[in-house]
Image (cartoon, rainbow, N blue to C red; front, top):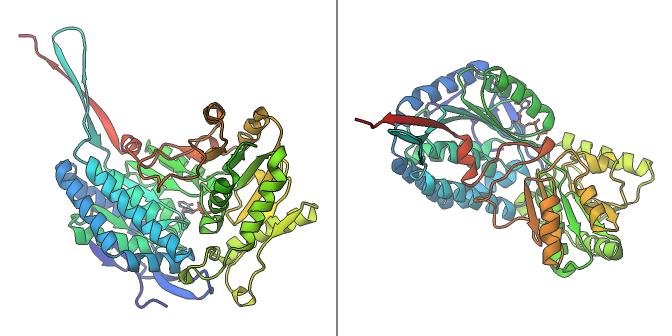
Amino acid sequence: MLAGPRKHFINGQWVDGHRAQFFPSLDPATGERLAELARGDSLDIAEAVAAARGAFGQWQFSDGLARGRLLGVVAQKIRAEAQELARLESLDTGKPLSQARTDVEVASRYFEFYSGVADKIGGETIPVPGPFLDYTGREPLGVCAIIIPWNYPLQIGARAIAAPLAAGNTVVLKPAEEASLSVLELARITADAGFPPGVVNVVTGYGDEAGAPLASHRQINHLTFTGSVEIGKKVAAQAAANVVPVTLELGGKSPNIVFASADLPRAVPIIVRSILQNAGQTCSAGSRLLVEDAICDEVMARVLEQFQSVSIGPGIDDRQLGPLISAQQKARVLRYLTEAADQGLRISQAPSLPQELARGNFVAPTMLHDVPLSHALVQEEIFGPVVTVTRFGAEEEAIRLANGTEYGLVAAVWTEHVAQAHRVARRIHAGQVFVNTYGAGGGVEMPFGGYGQSGYGREKGLEALRHYTQVKNISVYVGD
Ligand code: ADP
């Protein structure tokens, strides 16, 4: 277990919280206690929001240039501590160490990206009839509340705080109770970098005890929520009651659509990675494989061959597949698989799990054959290393299947025909479509967010800044 309890970070101080109670954060690879986290409540949230509101008074008028420089220092400090941060993230989430290293690098790049744009957030002059000068400016909103999940705490935490800070907002972040450690380190790094007290605050704790009072707080000015549809709807309704705008990123059921012309030797390893990365616990995981009839058996055989060679073990040992985050999550995934087996669906699972991993939350890579569109396995987010396969005949059917869930986060089209690639991409109901790839270098610069039940609003890239600023129009009479 890591030494010492982890406290809240409020107004530049490490504090126990009003109750001074702590709860355990477990190691997903062993189920043992990894750390103690402060158990925040509504009073801690109120204190953090008050600190953020107080800090906003000055911070909102800071120069974009100065803010950008501070963000740049955070990026450098994250890189300087990359080894330790990656280790911590891997221990806390169970993800393989090399994937955690990528997360650290991407977290650093968010700060780098928004560092470069903090002094470029401007407005426009608008031609109007008559003797008037009309122009707009973009102003920060105030206190941005952020609630994030456990699957990519550092990456999601970094993107969710760097963009609002660049625009001159202050933030209060509630990480997930399962994995909060790296986000607390991030808070420390922002303070080390020179962000004034109160600009960045982190309150740890359970969703209903700390998350709910944050979402419903009357003094927040924006809410960014990443997590389940169920809780997303709840927090959005709470924010709506206070006329607080919301960005929701709620997961997906993203398809890889593979046409007969696809370059399979290139495509299959990327498709496999899209479902096995972080053990499938990725909102944008490629959890549905839609394959043209003519090549479906071949694609399945190739995917299974790759599954067979996957190494499994604790994240910190840096195998290819780590454990799921918790015993509950493992039980949930296994329930789906038991039901599928009871219904007679064909399931391929490989390789078999080594005996010594029985204590951890491990699930072997799993393929479900020929699952119809209407099936729960195709419709519901499983959040494990589980891919469903569905065959299609014509392009029209591929599009119908791809658009056949309530989600719409990401999709990938695999084809060697350029017109088909663009034609299909245009018709896919999703916020992000890849062609002959799945992901493009971390995605820091690209707007990210969903259609339908995947949520609304966009994070990442320049697009995110629109959500963290409000437009002011100023009209000046210049006649005399
Ligand atoms: P997941 O299924 O990925 O755990 P959740 O939506 O349950 O997704 O959790 C995502 C984040 O939302 C976590 O930080 C969690 O603590 C928080 N959360 C859970 N319940 C609530 C709630 N009622 N109000 C606000 N936040 C919540």
